[in-house]
Length: 218
Image: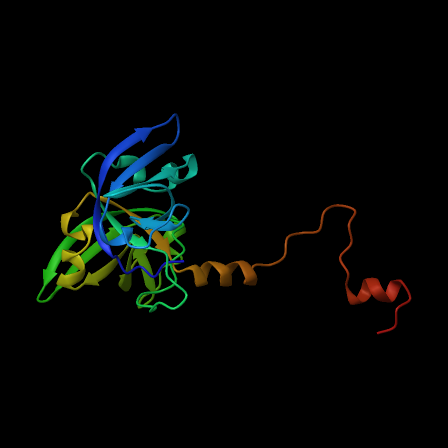
């Protein structure tokens, strides 16, 4: 689990492409402290497993599903990436619950300066926007942010200059894609409140009427 508080901006040293996958070689410094093979690191909000370690970085495998669902497929040598190690049990919960399982991508449509804030408007599919709530949390390229406004086509976040300066948001502009992970709580609530699936043909549900017909008094 992650919190969406980016620890550093790393850099893609090399991409080894596969048929439908890739191996990312990532230069880093801060996240290497106490990092071990098998540990999880969020790379632009995508949870990846460390497969090898070097003195100045690490490698991680990216599978087919992850390539399709996120923007990791567009990374090239020299691309900056947001990095965050998995949250330790005794760590501070600075952002919100982030699983590192990206739901999809959005497209930045505008960037506007507003005194000491920077507004980013991001267009997304209706299937993602249904889970975006005003004043709720969303993860954008691994950054925990608060939703300031939502419409049927897009949503907006307002970032402080510090957040922009220490993440890859500083290099993002209109037309750029970003990885999005909506608040995990909303998805679980929707699943739990959904009506049960119809019983398969020939299979009867256990109801009061069914028990009564079998001779059980209620």
